Amino acid sequence: MAIKVGIVGAGGMASYHYDGFTKAGARVAAMADMDTRRAEAFARVRPVERICTDLTGMLKALPDLDAVSVVTPNKFHKPLVLEALEAGKHVFCEKPPALNAGEMEQMLRASKKANRTLMFDFNNRARPESVAMMRYIREGVVGKINSAQASWVRRAGIPGFGGWFTTRALSGGGPVIDLPHMLDLALYFMDYPQPAWCLGGAFYDFMDNRAFKGPWGIPDSDTGITDVESSCHAMVTFTTGQTLMVRCSWAEFVERETVSVSFQGTKAGGKVERLFGIDGVDGTSIDSCRLFTEEYGVQVNRDISTEKDETMGRIGQAANFIETLNGAAAALNTAEEALILMKIVDAMYESAASGGPVRIP
Ligand SMILES: NC(=O)c1ccc[n+]([C@@H]2O[C@H](COP(=O)([O-])OP(=O)(O)OC[C@H]3O[C@@H](n4cnc5c(N)ncnc54)[C@H](O)[C@@H]3O)[C@@H](O)[C@H]2O)c1
Image 1 (spheres, rainbow, N blue to C red):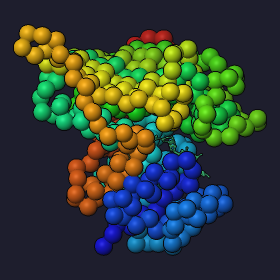
Image 2 (image 1 turned 120 degrees about the vertical axis):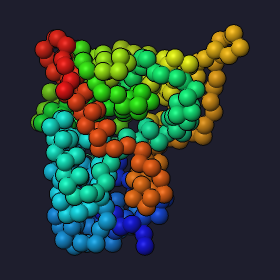
Image 3 (image 1 turned 45 degrees about the horizontal axis):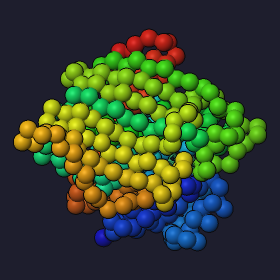
Image 4 (image 1 turned 45 degrees about the vertical axis):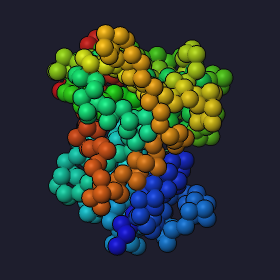
């Protein structure tokens, strides 16, 4: 019997969830959105049996759902995830996992209590470049990763002014919380070590300048709030002695939007990167996966060719959720890892606010 899923939130990301779930053999039975016109528009392209206005109605209408995916603005992740888990459903939730580590802790506890799978859309782990790199890391080619650099930097990529993305109460923050993908990918490559300290700074430039708006995102709201950072640069140390530099921005004077993790291991270094032609998703982006090592007394660079995935692993990660439930694949990410990630996010904000180093619990 196919796994039966309901999606909550018919916005920009929902189609990737639908396509990934169905690719892995699941059936998307329902779509819930408080804006029924959006749910209906979605269902005209990707059919579902039921359209609902909220998760509560969806759970009532289809009590035999196996799983729920949460694709709403960040503030609603925690309450919706908790409601779905308490109803006995497995949950796939968009990133960021929650507004902060405290919320994430509650979600982790609830998944354990309900004995249900809770996974997140850290889609960059499912990119062909990351999958290839992880194989080298797991096979021991890289050795121990001493240091890494995680960057998602944009030159002009503010996702709309005054919408939920730029309203801290709804989003939890700006690019630190919106672009946690490279932080997550670096931690994944480093074997998710226990963080120890964080020291960072945040900047608030350009958040009133329309020249720095991205070519995607949600419509501007003239009455809305814009109270989040435009960039943050931080360093994180780990109890293992490893170190990580994190850069994330929606708007700062970089050459162009760059998404990358580089690392230096005891046997090889490496880099997984996407260079965008223009800010945003575009067909001219260049993806690469490279290793830097030494062989037979000479320095060697290896270019690892992988298939192009314009979705940056979004369909693959949603498919992996279903395959995890089916027992056909190992989970690409866990709720325990999400808690570590959210503790680092909290520490980046705390350090930026205090100007000093923050110990990560
Ligand atoms: N993984 C990625 O690459 C990626 C990219 C962009 C956004 N996201 C994440 O996806 C999530 C959604 O972003 P989006 O761009 O699709 O947003 P969006 O604003 O386009 O869509 C959100 C939808 O959720 C609906 N909604 C809000 N609260 C609801 C509730 N309580 N119940 C039912 N429906 C509700 C809204 O009406 C809207 O249709 C966010 O958490 C965001 O961070 C992930």
